[in-house]
Image (tube, rainbow, N blue to C red):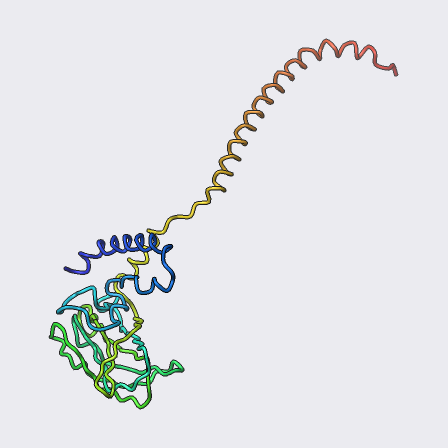
Length: 253
Ligand SMILES: [Ca+2]
């Protein structure tokens, strides 16, 4: 199934997930929530942990960039402990062969290039595991994997990024940050759409009351206008009668 075909169902699912999470949030402690939240489809988080994407293809359990070939991409992968890796192990599950550089990030956040070259997984393969020897002479906890996405057509999806230590053990990333993620805009829109619009009920009732009072005042004013008009008519009728004697009583010059 193509990404386009499942785009809308994904947004709907996200809404449902957001609602179900919101419904259960109040009952859980913050620390409990971390392990409960589901990984969003194709998110950077999908590249954490051991490989879990079966076979090859456009599968939600791997990371995918926002666009198939729009820009250069990268993944910053963090590990639970400092180690001196002998190699990086990258599980590329869809359109592989686009990795071209790996750098180590030290404590000061500085990048040190530890490999640059041609991805060992051929680009015409459906998937592959690229094991790339690294030259690292200090302990690291964080690496950055560069992906030349425009060079390899389609989404270049990555399921897992491990570091092989001196004993041959592979450590899988515990946290991954990506240059971009497929569906991130759709997810953001879905979250905004799912969020209830805050309504200040008290203020609304106050405004309704003020409106009712204004209407009453308008009625009073109209009534007063009618009465003033009647008074004016009465005055007009009576003034000519009363004005004549007033002139005769006026003081003589
Ligand atoms: Ca690409």
